[in-house]
Image (cartoon, rainbow, N blue to C red; front, side):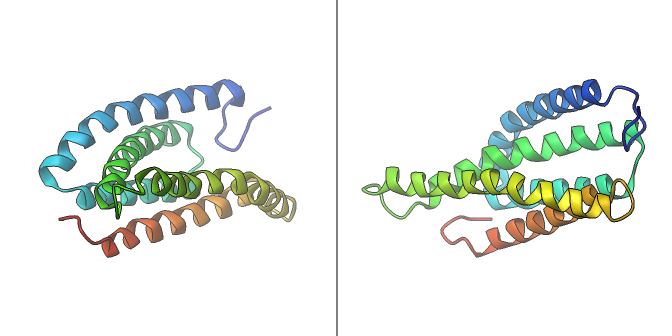
Amino acid sequence: MKDAVGVAHPEQAATNFVILVSITSLLSAFAAGWLSDHFGRKRLVYISGFMMALVGVIFVITHNFPIVIAAGALFGLGYGAYQSVDWALVAEVLPSGKTFARDMGVWNIALSLPQVIAPVLGGPIIDAFNNAGRPVQGFQVLFTMAIIYCIVGTVTVRFIRGVKR
């Protein structure tokens, strides 16, 4: 049985995809730290956030496995850069050394909560749209939502004060 991108063994393809995203994100995390020190944290967040949103568009419009794999590598580059620079950005703008641990805890909850909510909402969204028609429509809706969230999150970095560029 083939999946939406036409691979015969989707489980193995998904594993390979995750490995590729992990490796490329690891590589970009190291480079992004250095780049953010030289060119500004916000600038790197903008670049990586919009890169991830662009990859989301590719995931919505294509069903070609080699393109999906290449886009996954790009996503990994953006994700690794975003994660490393995001941590640095947050550490730079925390309001007080006295409440540093509490503030990092709140920030961690803000990072973790969507990961708890996403499967609860995402699964039914995928099922509802897939059962209503095209077999990949649920994933296209989910990726479209992710694109919107990624763009909104990236743009809101503009309002962070106390960080240059």
